[in-house]
Image (cartoon, rainbow, N blue to C red; front, side, top):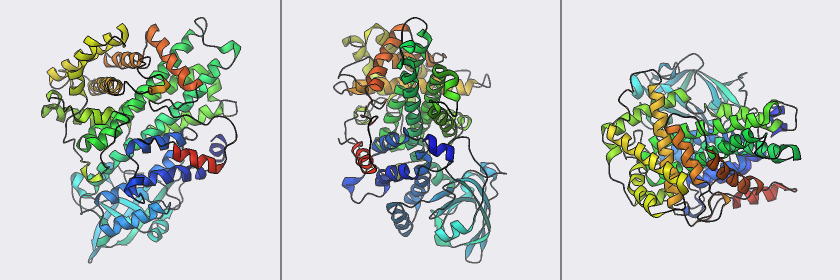
Length: 556
């Protein structure tokens, strides 16, 4: 990874290994080979923890593929699947233009005879160097969100309209962000994807899938950052974790481990919910994007503090940390900026409260299917993904229903865990009673962000509790079945955030978190509830790597 980053080269070999299993999400040879979204998330994580740039090198293709599979005609779907199966790549020229905002796009689709013509340009297009095709989002002359259409260009047109681009991001070095210019390009009616004016809806629906699977970049990069910081902190006699001078490091590493554990659970629940309750995926994907972005950013910042200047040097023994840090800084803005995400979530939460979603009874059949990590999922189908969240949140009502049983009958959580669960339940009950979460959401400029982050933290608490509750017989996070060393720190962390704090752990929770860190990091396991064993030592051939990567997908 370090050598590739220094050379500005793409991760070709690693992308080829990861791209094969990912293609099985959309283009399996038969249904028995189809990957579920949670398995795809793990595949990307296994690869991306070695090089985060493998995510954009494979995921840019998925955006365009998803759009065509969602709304394209049978012949368009067949063409895209053939390209995908052959290992080809389609670019998506969508939301970015250098001199125009989203709804003021200057890329225009105009009428010309029996067809259309495409004029304008697109900027920062992923896989822009050598695409096998290009899906273009363009303005078709109407107004508002229904004024956009999608056009599928073939390989010849895509490559002919590409122009050199000198734009480079500080991270994801080696990934091409191309520039395309269209000057009266003829477009036939059969090149439209979906109906005219449906382009924005199709794009936003397809981005739910991309948003979910791309969470793997944050999780994988954070895993690598934490592993590097942990190795430095415990690697020498003068740097061992102890209660004396390294007490600050202990707190930082405990918070970083817990934040990554919560981000892992949020991601797993969100991708599983997208298959079980696809009508809620729009909100679930947005919640997960916000939570995972904030949690992993905090974890990497804590790791950076542990490493100090050593983690910022481009030529030192820990230079891999600098690569990961830069890559994750760019990943934070993939598909949606943090500000736009807060606005979107604020709108979605308001809509859910208006229809009474917070007070609906729990659907007891849905939650085990979402949260039981060894349970089968229904077939993955894009058609059920909607632009608005037509279904209510499946988690919060279920937690409110089961929380009294946990608090009254179980002692495993300990006083700290039970107190945190009691407080979270009270806050969730208060949130539902308020109807809109707060009475002063318009009172101050920061109130929307505060309300959104409070809701996100409470939702994370529900995900943590219900995942533990429905997997008590499984060895989660590399610990024996039934262990709660990961539960209490996770609940206390999200509770602190829900109360307006910023990622703190008490002394007891910090010690429990370090138990989890030792089990996973000293045990060479992925920092995940599904704690896959990692290959850290010894020579591994390319054939071995491919076999191990394929075996990394858990078989239920």
